[in-house]
Amino acid sequence: MRFVSVLSFWGVASVLIAVPGPDWAFAIDAGLRRHGAAAAGGIVLGYAGLTLVVVAGLGLLLATTPAALFVFTAAGALYLIWRGSKTLRDPADFTDPRDRSTTSARRTLFQGMVVSGLNPKALLIFLALLPQFTSTHDRWPLPVQFTILGLVFTLTCGAFYFAIAIAATRLLDTRPVTVRIVTRISGVSMILLGVVLALERLIV
Image 1: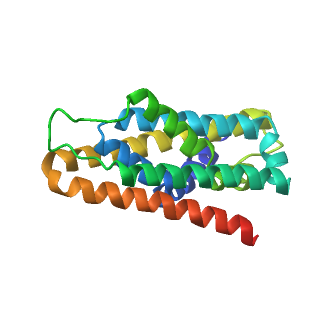
Image 2: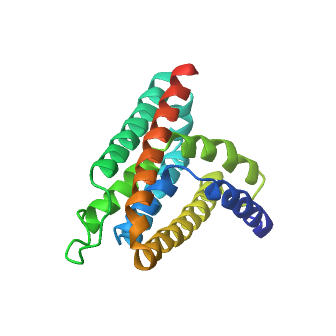
C-alpha cells in the first residue's frame, strides 16, 4: 500500500474529524470531569470496532439493509439524547474540591465506546471513504488496506479528542466559573445531534 495513499487519507480524515459532532461534545464533557484519557480511549475502541465491522464486510450489509441501518441509527440517536439529558441533569461543578467527578473513568471509557461505536455517520464515512484510497491491484489484500486506513482514522481521532478533552480540563483549572455553562452546552449539543440523526433517518 502506497504511503502517499495513507497520507492523503489522513489529510481528508483529519478534516472530517475536526468537524464538531457527538465526539466533540462528549470529549468536552469528559474533559471537564477530568476523564479525558478515558474518553479518548473509549472513542478509539469504538472506532476500532467499526473498523472491524467494515473489514468483516458487515458494514456494507448494515448500510444496505434499511431496517438494520434504522435500528443502528435509532440506537445511536437515543443514546446521544439520553447522554445529553444526563449531562444537563448532572452538570460538571468542581467548585468544591471534594466533588471531582460523579462518573468513574471506567464508565467514561464505556460511554466513549458507545458514542463512537454507534455513530452511523462514521460508519457511512468509512464505507464511502475507505474504498477511494485502496486498490484491488495492490499487493496487500483489501481487508489489510481497510484495516490500515481504519487504524489511521481511529488513532487520529484518539489524539484529536484527547487534545479537546485536555483543553476542557485546562478550562476547568483556569475558569471554573464557566465550567457549568460549557457542560450544559455540551449536553444540549448531544441532544440536538441525537435529534438530527433521528430526523435524518426518518426523512430518508
